Image 1 (cartoon, one colour):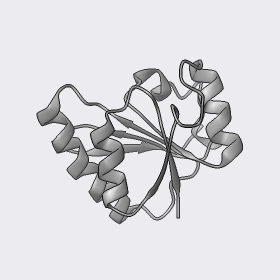
Image 2 (tube, helix red, strand yellow):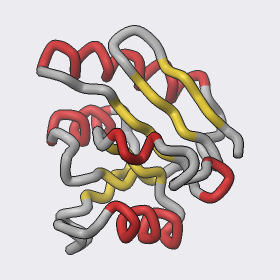
Image 3 (cartoon, one colour):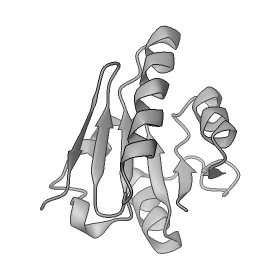
Image 4 (cartoon, helix red, strand yellow):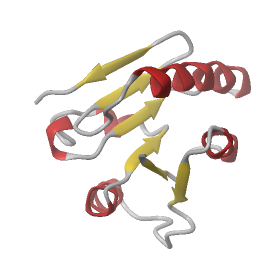
Length: 119
């Protein structure tokens, strides 16, 4: 089962949501990586075998963070509390449908998710 590395920009509600679904999470803050650069977080997630969960749109750049080079990135496009709740429902669908997260960028909005696996 995947372990989710929770970026510091991600709401505690999103981390709790994943825990309620019985997933293991590691928060960047608990990992003593708070304030680390995006590249450093990416490196840590990759080294530890974590799936990165973030609201940071910079991780959606497939040139900078090619899907083939990581264990999975889930980018949630959250704007407010209502948006977050809708994104959580889509995240739950993603997790029930997708068997493999590795080497994939998932972008979640209020209605759907998209996935990119290459380059």
